[in-house]
Length: 154
Image 1 (cartoon, rainbow, N blue to C red):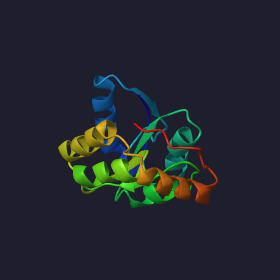
Image 2 (cartoon, rainbow, N blue to C red; image 1 turned 90 degrees about the horizontal axis):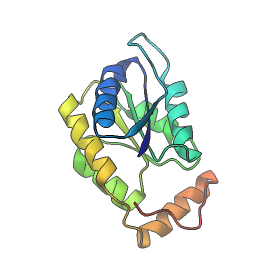
Image 3 (cartoon, rainbow, N blue to C red; image 1 turned 90 degrees about the vertical axis):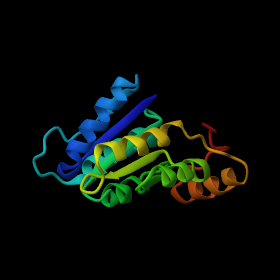
């Protein structure tokens, strides 16, 4: 799977950890930065990763900042992206199953690497249920102009 990843300085170390885990699992990673723990503005990195998903160049995105909130707000501004700021595996599973979330955002300040691993693993292995949820995802897509005939299950 092609996965776009990005972070600001507060999420840098968690992003680097997640990147190593994803690469070891055989995923193709597009790391949009940041490349150091020096202070940067998160919107530029979150937007780049989210656009890769919204434009179909990546199937999913994993983003990190201090809280996970800022990058989630930015990602959700990009047409075709449905980001969830996940705090545990159950939360991200429901977002995948019911909302077809294609981006997960993580708190670099609150999540330990093993917690992030569990969230990302569940995010990647959980499939979208479709059915009545597809209608709702379609309605969300109409809001951002990315409406599709039917969301892809998986």
